[in-house]
Image: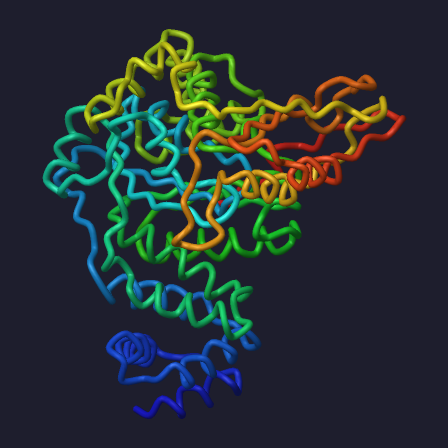
Length: 433
């Protein structure tokens, strides 16, 4: 079949068959279909969309374009979690040991992050000695022994997706729901999960800033997962302000430890309990979200969740004694308080700008070659709806440079204070099964 005929068919609103999609992805992966033809197909999909069957077939074609991870050697139902990203998204550091502590096996494949702060692996490497360079046999053994392990992403996992994503980035087709959904789900499915819980963000700091777009993406991913035999649930959560208080790698590790102790930020705790409840139900550890939540809360209260985090760090070479002495985590040279210039109530915190301020300090990567400073970042002291006094610190900058005027200005322009009270936004804004 000629690629140009497939492009024309999709351009005119036709539905591609499974065989046609497989041929397209196979040809693009091996180089026999050039970038210019796949660019035309991506644009046709952008304007014409894809049917649910097409989306599922595209996802599985990308799954089979490279390696897949076999987790059958791990006992129990393996439930993976994916977040569409945000600012201060410390969720995995808390959620993985928390659900593992009640019997949900967590075999997590994570990456390093571009953007405001590092990815999960970057954050964990703020713990001296921690590493993810382990072979698959060790990975599976650690999950069976400890209930939890994290490994780096395989280079040959969904190569078709990597290639197509790079093309979309330079052809104006990134914001295509079918292409976003199949990209995310192909990686989750290739990673070997039996079931998937999706945390789909909406708001200023999210990829999908509009609620309607977030709902559409969540529905699309849930449909794909269920069609290909993975029980899938999506939680829609607010990212109109940073999640938790800390934005920065070592700072987020400390906040994760606080949360596992039961003294972390309310919003981070609530999101982890919500996502963890769904994971426990999908894994068959609990029969309802209510029962699951009780188990998770008991694990935090008893110290079991924190103990699981320590065991996880130790098993992968990390210095777990830092959990009891988090002040020994790497720290920045300077701490600069950000005093409020007026009194009133916090009306808005532009999450994306706060994230950019953290990246200016060195907490994140602008390019893959950028070096992350694990010590730096920002800790917020106020959230939307909180009262503020004139001169009160609304945030603390953690920096290794004494020249931080640009980041300071970005924080000030990100936080809006009004004289009248403001209601805080709801954190959980929807669920899709």
